Image (cartoon, rainbow, N blue to C red; front, side, top):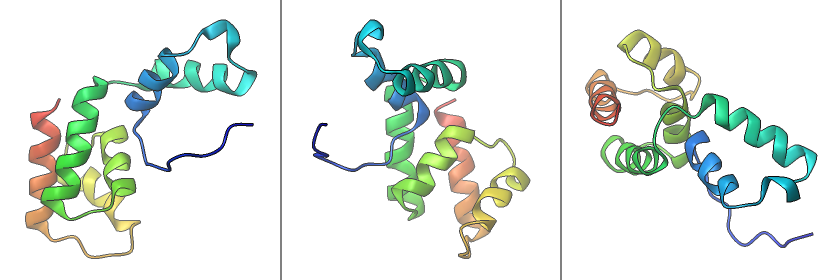
Length: 108
């Protein structure tokens, strides 16, 4: 078993990119299932996903994990965005939500 070298929150698109670096024939069952899943649901270029995640963290003062949630779902309205941020149990100002939506639309 490999040693964990680094722990980092990554989007579905980034997971797909990581798994594509490996030979599909040498993947175990979990890796194949994961690759199947991310192939169906990755809807954004990995570089754009990474850039969006970094921008959300920097501009909106949210955690990397929270940014990944936003990148994976890419809500398109304030109502959708509020439904995600509500679960974070912290107050996100309307101004910050607007910034988030702007960043999401820039990387669509």
